[in-house]
Image (cartoon, rainbow, N blue to C red):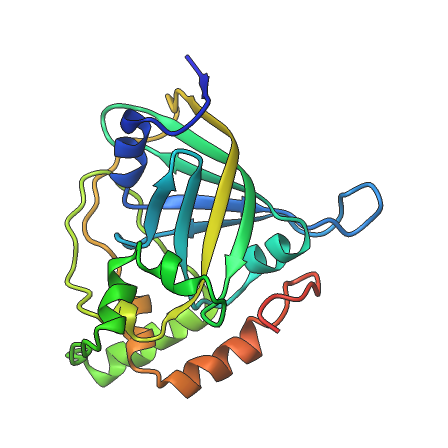
Length: 234
């Protein structure tokens, strides 16, 4: 049965940090009633990009992608829901609902939040990136995939791929910090049981091949506003 919790306890933390992906939902407010615009739901993958900061605060590393709906919506109204869903034999769903804040690299608070993510810690230490061993045809196809769509595989038992330090190579554009005002679980009985083949490394390798200036130019072109015209990374 569904239950509401006053905070994230050890059992809930073990569950959400063991999931290989999660979903983020936000919505804009374009009229006086607080409605209007397009609701957005984004799948998020990669281990070590989500952290529990305290029993009521979580954060995730926001990586460069083809859109910036979450950032735009949070800048406007701050409302957010994060959902974790088990695809293993034991069904369970956990939702964290609350208010979110966008922390950008130039924010004076960035170093404190970045310390919760191993990749950013590695970047600060000056670690290099792994060489790209894919073929030219593969690289071209992967680049087109990332430019146009976010793709994440869903599952429970994780067989990771070696992402090296690709996630450290400037692919991050923000840290999203969420303060919970409601934490609840539910059954998840209708969610299918699936097995994870591997984490998809396309986004990491795409970012790794870009220079810092190229990533900045990409974000300026694709991430400056939401699909409803709200400012994002402008």
